[in-house]
Amino acid sequence: MRKLPTPLALAAALACCPAQADISDTIKPFITVGSTYDNNLLRLPDNTPPGVQRSDRATQAQAGFLLERPIGRQRLTGHAKLSRVTFDHYSQLDYNGKDFSLDWAWVLGNQFDGNIGGSYQQVLTPFNDYHVEQRNLRTQRHMYANGGWRIHPSWRVRAGFQRDRFDYELGVQALNNRKEDLSEAGIDYLAASGSRVGLVARKIKGSFLNPLRIGTTFLDQNYDQDELKANINWLYSDITQLQVLAGYARRKHATFTERDTSGLNGRVTLKWNPRVKLRFKADAWREFAAVESVVVNQSINKGASLNASWDISAKLQANAGVRREKRNFEKMPYVTFDGDHNDTVRSTNVGLVYQPTRKVQLSATAFKDRRTGTPLIGTGNYRAKGVSLMATVQF
Image 1 (cartoon, rainbow, N blue to C red):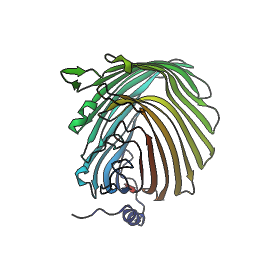
Image 2 (cartoon, helix red, strand yellow; image 1 turned 90 degrees about the vertical axis):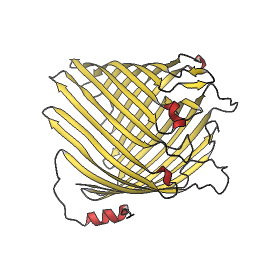
Image 3 (cartoon, helix red, strand yellow; image 1 turned 60 degrees about the horizontal axis):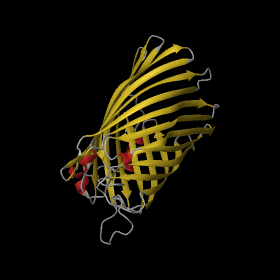
Image 4 (cartoon, rainbow, N blue to C red; image 1 turned 180 degrees about the horizontal axis):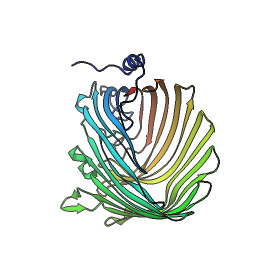
């Protein structure tokens, strides 16, 4: 089989080509090739016996297009991507990826606006919480519709609905197939400065599509979650912006109610741009989250991250990020485990993005992950690091 060109070879060849006009103002095709080396692909624990293959290299080829089409005051945006990913050692993991999305930003008169759209994505499930040498594709379907009514120059009411569905290829993970419906309604105060302060009420219904069977009994893992949150976008200055979506949340289960939980839930984001070429973004969160495992099915995650980007020149950008997250797990009712139910993940990354021409982009990223904590989900402690090279060309 003929090998794909390396990212550097492709970018070098195309960077030498003369500049050409865009094929279309609406549709912008692109291709991407890349290679990623990971020294612990399956996220195996530190005490894994010697002789087990830990490292691997993945090669990716992707083709697709971006869509942006204004129609009067309406706007259509989206993308379509098809990819092929192959592995040097774990070839049984080779897969074809898919990623499609479409959004209609609608406007009606001077008072009504909103968005309607959806997306479809098929990718390899990360190995962080389930460590097998078998391919396990995750398919996610996302659809949404929302709208707002500006009842006064300073006030806007809004409502929306979204549905997410997750399906897993591997039979043993079918118990994680689920559907989540979110309905919300809120009101916002719109300040003359462009800031927004609002309140939003949400109802989330989680439904697991394959009930877990314990002996002759089927376990109902479905849940209802009610939320009341502040929704704030504060433009403090030209260089500082604070976003808050946080408040009180309560999650209840129909059976095994000892799994019920409540408390602070949400995310705070601070953006700070002290220089035109220097940008920082900090996040902090406490959220309920699903876990892709056969031992636990949800966790309470608390974490923080900091990311920075620096435009070194008109063609070169440097990026760096750090992230720390602690997860407190809710184990399945049939699981017996007397140890700690939490773990902590620390991640760092640094990278460079080089754009020799308007349509060619090269990137190089180095990353490092470390987990410490409970062996409840199959891995207590692990370490992983690697590097990724990518090249993208837009036509």
